Image (tube, rainbow, N blue to C red):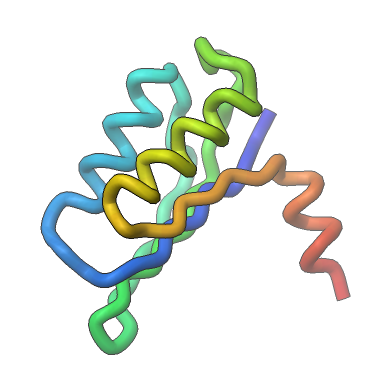
Length: 89
C-alpha cells in the first residue's frame, strides 16, 4: 500500500535523516520525496510504500507522530487513497 508522509517544522539539521531512519527501521520504502524551506520552515512530502512494513499502519502512524513531538515537528502519514480523496477538487 502507498501512503503520503508530510513533515513540517522549523528548519534544522537532521530532519530528513531522522524521518528516513524511522521509516527504514519499519521496512518502509521511499518512492518519491520533495522538500523545501519556506522562510525558515522545513516542509517535506514523501510517497512511501508500506506493503513490507513490519508494524501495523496505526502503530507506524503513532511512531511518526511521537517522533514529530520529540523533535518539535508535525509528522503525519495517510493512506494514498484517503489523501487523494481529501484533495480531490
